[in-house]
Image (tube, rainbow, N blue to C red):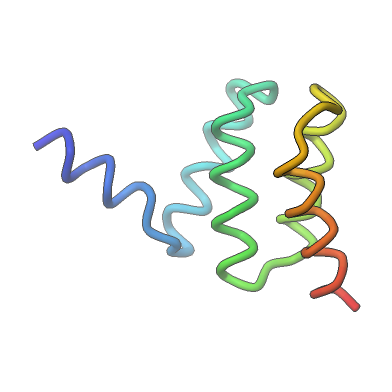
Length: 79
């Protein structure tokens, strides 16, 4: 059903990360998709990809404190 499909799409897997990236190709200014991609990439320890997503979000809307925190945390993980 729809709820199950949505839950599966939110699971941090390589397959879902690719799907979120594809959705960003179609709509690069989708903040929800950027956030989901960044969170998923961060969870999968793909920190450069996560940082990219968070940077894109802040370029679109600099007034997102949670995203600033996620970006700072990602920078720490990058070393």
